[in-house]
Image (cartoon, rainbow over all chains, first blue to last red; front, side):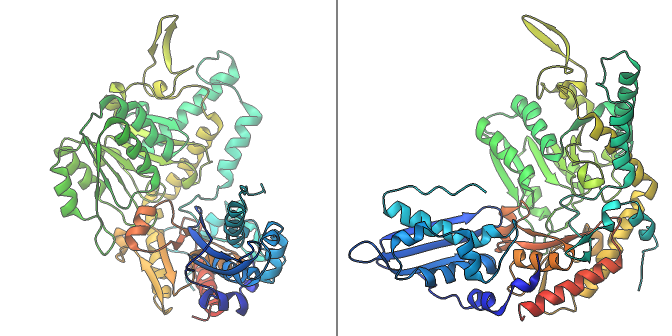
Length: 135
Length: 414
């Protein structure tokens, strides 16, 4: 992978993550980790009174710049969005968010961990079960 | 620039490895992930092709010419491996898939038979998961207890604590000869003799030592020693377990089926002699033969030279890395106590980000917990970046590696 990917934007979110912390009270709490590299993400979400929007969202976690920046940027993007919007989030959306066209198979999992956590939380809240699509 | 050390002619060696000619991300490949697996010289690749194109046949039972040739090559390889680690006889070398299977073989065939409820198993904190998880399972099955010998701040085994644990009269003591993370070389001879005095059976995980230094199981005095072929220029899927004959004879079988039996009747079977008792089914013949070629290649270089070469590379790399601010190196810093493995972190750059940036420069290193999570927890870090050396690495490779570290440093503004 080329190091060009590590632009100022990613490093800024890695060093100064937005929406980092716990959220109390919250309606959704989901966490997951990538056993291969040990990246961890936990997200807490407060849902709007009419139960259809992400009113507030925060995350905590540890890991590489890609996983942490991706989680932080995703929380910014998700705030105020309908829960249904989460269902449609794709790999391309995340690559676009990170400002890159390709991360390579070794690192895409780092970027997608936050999506997995967000989807798991929202699906569970909506009474459904999220299963990660196969590669 | 010092192109090669006095001990190994690196330029000549490099030419023996076809893969080292390839480019990665437009750059010359600098392969520093040797603790994970090593590259293969042409003689090893040729040995595989030669077997499949000239004398591919099953071993031991055939009376036709191809089978005779295959059997001879397979058993010759066992002899080469035996000689390489100074095993008293080739019968004490069992071919396995690698270190993990070798250790599991001891767990199943020795552990199931001899470990009892309440027994103590002593391990160390610096073990790879493969020399930890099998014993955890055995302990659970048998109601035995595991005690872990801690490490010092420097990253060496705490000998005082190790001795204290031996006072518990453990049934088994299993330890790594060389840590895949810290590079720490344990004095296997001393630890084996201490364990033996305490009445324990000893298992040495030699995955990181057999490829890199002269090794003598008789001098070491261990009961079992496990290693992998792919970490010593051989193919994947082949490795060996050395076991003292008396131990191997006392054990039950591992897997069962063909080739491991002497006779089979409808009401039971008698086991074959060692090592065949532990090699059920058709063996990995091609890879075993190619492992023999790898052993020959290393023997021709001379294991003392291989070791000296890596010490020189370590010295060179330590010297260069120490000039980079915020580099933290884990493990002992005295070269004689350390294998050619450097685990490090640079400021707050996560190991995976480091490995990605280095990959962009054509430099292959490992990043993560290196299958030693308890050690990472002890060090209180999520992981490390790890550069590890072998016979084809030169000081020039280390210069490229250092350049890539400086690039990572500038990308991350640290």
